[in-house]
Image (tube, rainbow, N blue to C red; front, top):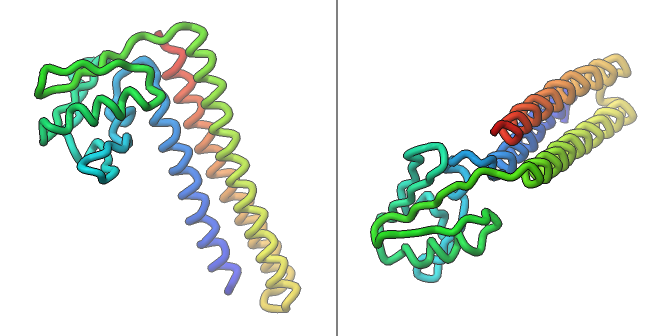
Length: 186
């Protein structure tokens, strides 16, 4: 493996780590309705765990309401059960065809709790990125030790690694600021 390949694989891993943080952030309830709050829920549909977004259309008619319209009305009970089991803290209501989720405004305490949770998630993302960098750095050092690349190439590779880590930790920080602002807005 060459230094260039190591850097390419490292960037791919960092992209995936960033996407993971982004996905986790999208599942945090902010007092504003969003389809991402529920589309990842697993519904027991005829004995098969199925994603809600594969069973129903999910829309947001206004800022505090999510409407879920299952394509198979017999799935309503299972969808409601999955929503109740989830940690959303929302009680669904249905009229036999449509499930409505009313998103209540968050209390100040809950907003502070969520801000802490988001901070923890972003820190986990940064740790993951640093671990990826460490592994890549060790791989570059091994290449140099095995005489596959020169010392200069190793240092160039480490510089590129630093640029990658700066880029992705910067993105995580931007994401954190954006999510904090979203959480703290009333």
